Image (cartoon, rainbow, N blue to C red):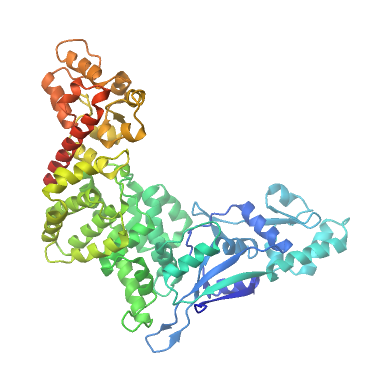
Length: 598
């Protein structure tokens, strides 16, 4: 049998709230803002009043840390499950303001009707009705004594049964005395074990990531600026997605708005680009990689705790140094010049909108590479070339599709080699050989999906080459992608369905091309040999019926740019397998030329 490395204790709610108030239990806002609505807070109060169970809280005890003067500091507990319930209690019982999902500070006042023994979210009508107690917080928290509460209610409602009121209000004050279970996990449990315990206990099936633990750890450590650092990461990610949040943030968190970090992220108020809108996981992964040369976020949690990997002890000096390094890395990550130049590099490779990037880890590592090479003083033009090629190589070879964290850590070490160009050349030799371009890539393109990474590499190659859409004279693939144009089937779906083909056939990557809607509508469900005949007729002086191309050489060039074999001009549904085979070879060849030119 395994050793039990946790304790299950029952605490009175007022004791738990006291531990929170005194900082013995840190609420690190794993889920960040309070996302419950008022009715959920009301239901929690009702359950406690009736004596129903309200589930367990789970806390993970921080390790005891050796201070610089040799003394030991006891580790506080970090709440990893139950944040919403504890926050609800601080709002309803203590009357404290909470930060809602819009990052506004709000009061959630819960009302109680002693005669009906029901709870409700307070509102104007309830406040005007003397039969309701509009806010239970002063009574439950003990700010108003039970005797005073009974007397005041009876004065406002003289006809009520005083004994009934006394009984109901007495039960109301007992809410703070009700017990709640707290599972306290030992500090030496690794993150994987803690996550497993969390998943088994949490019936909602919520998954706790290692980034959640890292953010919790950062937020809980007030000694080294943890709360402000956590806000910097969180607000950066929020503002990247919603630039308008900048002005709201100044109003809602004036303390943070006065900080150095706020000045460093303020540039986002004018940034509407969505190519790289990172999550806090992305920020932590890149920053940890560039500053610490590591990829496993579990190690970041250990370092922020002060872990000495050699002695297996926890030391304050290591925690302090780790927080300083992380803060430095976050500043480099959120730097306007760094971030915007990196985005321009990715766009210069033809990846111009966020839905083209199917691997966030490829994007993250490319940014880590950019920051790492820049920190070493590598020439900017050389950085651009290396980052572009590495990013596309990562996608072509599905580099981060397996054990992404392990691969990330392995690759991070490569950044520090004397010349990264040599590193890239070695990997290209091993993974992008002639056999890859001629056979491996052709075979990999044999897949049905509009969202496959390889399809988007092909589209990026078209954007980079400034190609026109299929059968378009003027409209480019770049314009079609930028304006959320659609990809269409070269062999129409209805045509193939009528010939017994299924989704796995007609949705092949090699059957897709960016085409203007107007052209696609004219094509309808016709066979290529029919609609291409219309395009050819236009080139011989016939009326314009399909797109704007009226020169034969221009038509052939358009087919070449879209990797459509000229044999398709006379193909029918029966030629579909042959068409796919030919087009895959052409697509692979185009992608190879594109990559070599990056």
